[in-house]
Length: 221
Image 1 (cartoon, rainbow, N blue to C red):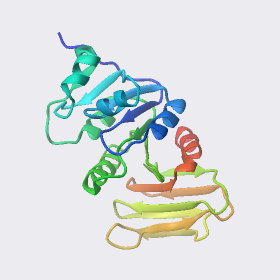
Image 2 (image 1 turned 90 degrees about the vertical axis):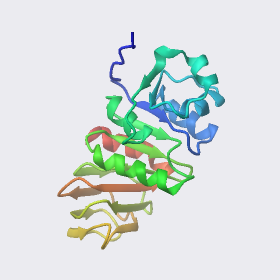
Image 3 (image 1 turned 180 degrees about the vertical axis):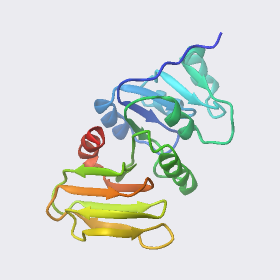
Image 4 (image 1 turned 45 degrees about the horizontal axis):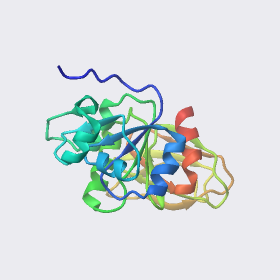
C-alpha cells in the first residue's frame, strides 16, 4: 500500500539537487525546520547531515543509498514527466510557505524552469534562496520593510501594469513585460516598499540578507 501523504501546515524547507552550501541549508532550517527534498535533493540533504521527512518527484535522480536510508514511506513518487521535480513538490506540499534551497546557481535552464513554476503556481508562496540572492513570485500587492539602499529588482514573466512606491524609481501604472521594459537594479529610497500589480507574473529579486523581510511580507500578503 502506498503511504498517505498529508499536506504540511507549517513553513517547509525544500532542498533541490542544485548548488547548496551547508551554511545556506543550516540557515534556512533555523527558519523552517521541516525538511522536504525534491528527488535527488535528498542525497544533498543527507550529505549535509539532515534527514528529509519526505522526498517528492519522479525519483529518477535519487540514489539507492538514499532510498535505503530513508525508506519507502518517505518517498512520494509522482511519475509524470511533464514537469520538474521542483514543480511537483511545490504543487503537492500544501505548505503555507516554502523556502527552496538548491534551485538557484548552476544550470540556467533549471533556474528558468523554477521561475516558470513559481508563476504557474502563483497560489503557492515560495522563496528561492541562493548564495547571493533570493527570489519569489509576488502576489498582486505586497509591502516590504527593507533598509534604505537595498537592491530591489523586478522581473516580469508576463505583460502587466505595476505601481511601485518607496523605491528610488517609483511609478504609477507602469507597463512591464519580459520582452519590453523590466525593473531590475532599483533600490529602496524611503520605504516601506509598496508593490501592486494588475495580474500575476512578477518575480522579485532581493539580496539574501532580505530573507527575513521577504518571509514577513509574504506571510502578511
